[in-house]
Length: 89
Image 1 (cartoon, helix red, strand yellow):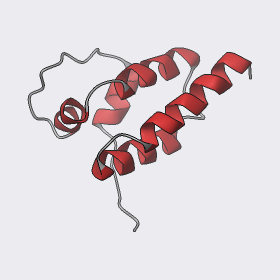
Image 2 (cartoon, one colour):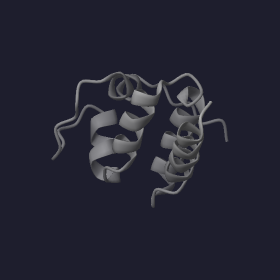
Image 3 (cartoon, one colour):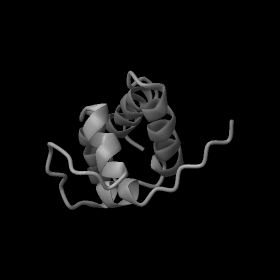
Image 4 (tube, rainbow, N blue to C red):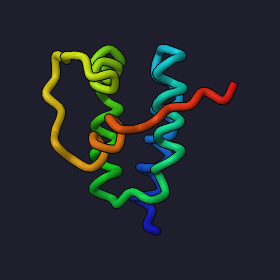
């Protein structure tokens, strides 16, 4: 695996764990942990874009509520929308 991909993965992991709200930290870190090692470079770039959105729009998108943002029709957004989060704490 190349350095660019590894650096992008590290950035994604960090960003998914430190969102600002505990609920989104848990949701996005669980999602990232599940999929990060099977995503292509293009998918990782889409995931980085997803993580750059604010928590409110991400939460609403995940829960099927209207958002202020139009989400692209891509693999990562489909995976996130259909992700089944289970809180194991």
